[in-house]
Image 1 (cartoon, rainbow, N blue to C red):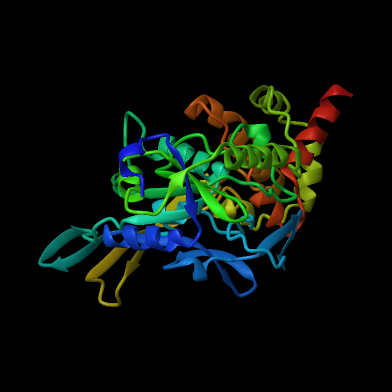
Image 2: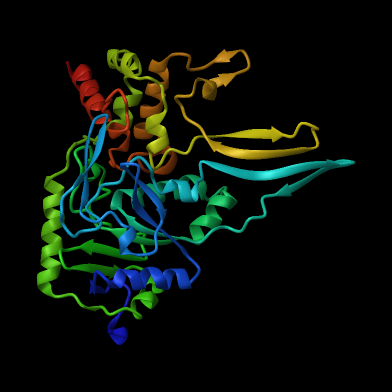
Length: 373
């Protein structure tokens, strides 16, 4: 071990088997270790305890409306590009009890008393780090911070992974959100054939690394990692011109392209559910048969749900065309004004998991072509 040399921003070489010791150290510090796992021919984020739980030698082939896993026979654990799940489920759960009200002479309200869990997220890509940062801006604003999100966020430990093998629907380079993780992590891994390069990003990450059998990273290993990342930039499956998106979208709300995509869209909400940044939600009440106990829950919702836009007197977006337009113009336009960033990180999930194969990069390109014609 090299305890006396470690500092924040240090880069060290870690034998792959030492990842088990890192996971054990995190659990010893009270964290639930969560990472990518194979389940039912798909990829999910679930509890892990060792390297044996990770998808070794597996990659994912992705295209518009298509996802499949492929065994490569290699010994790498993080080559696979994530599936339909995103890390937002651990910070902004799909379903969460806000409070319970009980009538005992008068109504008594009890907030959810469960302490915020302590998660260690293992294998967070650069685009997913960017997505967490975007949700931070939405849920922890200067004027108001969501206390549930804030408590979960403060308890988070992030082990990022630099992405060396982007999928066919990835376009993080266009958004400046990958493939290299730049910030927001406690530790960042770059997986090579025989070892992990580890960059230390926080004091807590540094303290954990002092307990592991790591070594200073040689120039050869660092060059190999840099070359792999340079190659990943060239292998992006998609490209998106972001130069003037807010103006392009806001200035062409009546374009014919909205009608065309509206005929293809099923309004199924898949794109918003798999998106790592979307945060629309609704509150639902569940009351017992006696009317004495009720529970209020926060649940994920979507622009594409017809009821989302319903108000007394009618629906403000009755057509699928208008709902798709609202989703895209908000994510790639209005978010810039609201949060200082676009609401897309180029992960490509919305393309992969759209049953109609709608590709937002193609839609933007087609809209440009129509406007410039």
